[in-house]
Image 1 (cartoon, rainbow, N blue to C red):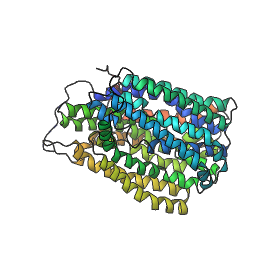
Image 2 (image 1 turned 45 degrees about the vertical axis):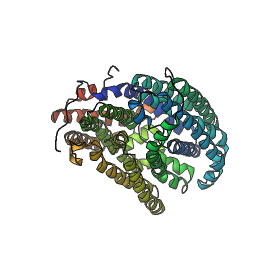
Image 3 (image 1 turned 135 degrees about the vertical axis):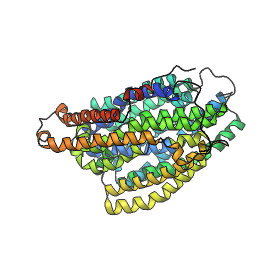
Image 4 (image 1 turned 180 degrees about the vertical axis):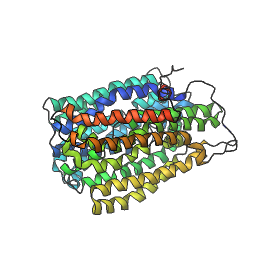
Length: 506
């Protein structure tokens, strides 16, 4: 480093602005988490695999077809005087993307059903097409509010939307509805969300709905990121499609349980990354770009204290977690689950958001292109020769390669003419070291607990509470050990939590 950044003028952490989003998602996380857990118990294993296949198709289109236009709002709105054109043309673009997605589902679902060796998929053509169309059309809802700095309003929308979505996916099956009935209910929910997107996003804004010049500028910015998504999402899901096309729906259900993650990453990473993008844009607008590295290290350090212990606990307590959440019939998914935990660790550094905030979307495209090139042969060979473990192993290797490429670009994105940075300058080494030591010590405690109590836990009575007892015991031990280890290294956990307190918006 050739210089040091100026301390922020405000005494409050910018991460506090993400507090409402984190709290809203935390409140609804339990409801959202209930979806696969409830369906795992009320649906037959084949139907459960079909459920995962349906949403694999919908979510692939959901992340590919926006082409980066929605995400570009994080770049343009903090810098724009006239915001309505950016929002209006984004809403229109996503409505058109929804129609394209619906047409793709309608025309190709039969072929996909053949690839998955699951003819039942074709029966869901109509509700899946409707759900995909309205889901894509409503993509800008929360983004439009967060990009304007209205994090409290965005948090309220997350709260209502996620709660309603969980209800329409859980209540119908509990009342005896079939998987088809649940898909109809989900499609109706997505339609209501689409109407709300138009009503909420443009509220209080004046001016033209569309500007050709601004839209060309928006597309030019979004194109590299959108092209990256065209590579990234199929690449990230390649192992899911490969396994789905190789095994029966029941075995695919086991694999998807192995890939399951609690929504902690989305709860913290997404709002933190979003607020970081807005903050970097504000610093640039105010001529304080050198403070960007401070914001990046602050965000990464706070995420490390949460994600590293979370990953360590899931790895150590994987058998207890799978048995408690899904039932003992899913225990064969434990090895896959332990590999998938790597995704939590790789989410500590909000690198993609940083590069988008600095307009370096071409670097994101390059990393995804390399990941795609690595994934195709790895997935083909892995699934063919190693089955389920080959699929998840191929995903893990590709993710590490892609993250390494992004990390190599972050120092240049945060550097200025007066401040030259290297990789060692952007990583919060102290926070990573302390969190790693504390999480590792706590994980060892869980392994020792299992070895000491294996006989006792193996003869527990039937019932949900008894099934959860081993997981709860491991969780209590882990938290106590982790907090004690943090205190031993000089870290005060309550101060970490205080960094995410909601701040009053200006």
